[in-house]
Length: 403
Image 1 (cartoon, rainbow, N blue to C red):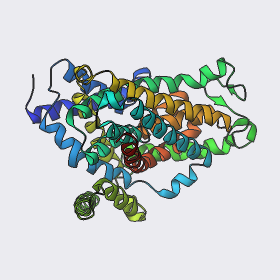
Image 2 (cartoon, rainbow, N blue to C red):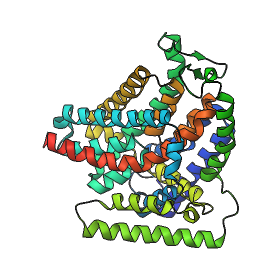
Image 3 (cartoon, rainbow, N blue to C red):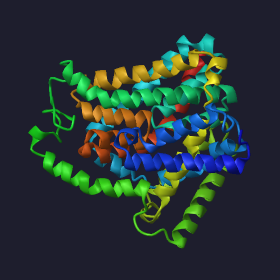
């Protein structure tokens, strides 16, 4: 077994490089997205005994490294872009967050005795991760000081459910229409469902304009997370490092001074505030570097997810994740259809909640929902911030219910 931290970092970096290569070159495998592939590769390395399930490398990635990545990604978020994303995608995303909160709360109440005294922490983490992706699981877990064994088992169950849910969201639009539940629309040649009540649908007369606009903006947004828009200048890098270190220091100081409020709330707030300054948001490479840090962190999370931990902790962890995601699905697709939201929007919004913007992008690309790409990624980026707030709030509510 390879235990040297430098060698572990090298193998995790290899996982990320392989995931990005497959995402770009292989349509079927790439549909999973580099984030999920990196997690699965990390799991494969640790579960086959090549690298350990515990390492100083993972501790660093789960601490200052992932916080730095979160800050850099948040620096790309223009709050106004969420408004421009359109009320339908934002409404679908809101339903998804509500569904995750309801699901994790019910799961915690049902499984409180089986999980133990930290069930309320798991409720907060699963609410957070299913409102913005895996980064939020670590951020809220760190804030709540979740025990290592529960944290690792929770990640393993989360990875499993995330993979299942990606496949589900890819299939849902077709299955709903085939089953007669999507009769308000049809499926076009790409598998995308069209809805006559959708303002960006074909019958609205605006599809061409909306799609064209998004196709023009989409590559720019993709470049923001996958390739720098313009060369990364030394001055940009120096300013980014200054902002990241300053935000980390300020949030840690405020977290100690204003305890028990966790530092992650201050980190999120400071970064979002700075992002509204045009010159800060225009820094070349912030999204790319932040996205890479998040990807290698997720690969490390996968490596920590030794499946034997589920056996040690018990199947209730898997049940917890399944209940949370299941009820998330019931709310977002059930209520979403009742209020007239179209299936492609709901599917992309659900992936933005469960897997983050990378998963939303993968789903929209795989299904040809080009007009949902930009809105999906926009609300996915919002999920990085909203998930932390919602997760911590749910944790405290469930603590009161189960304590």
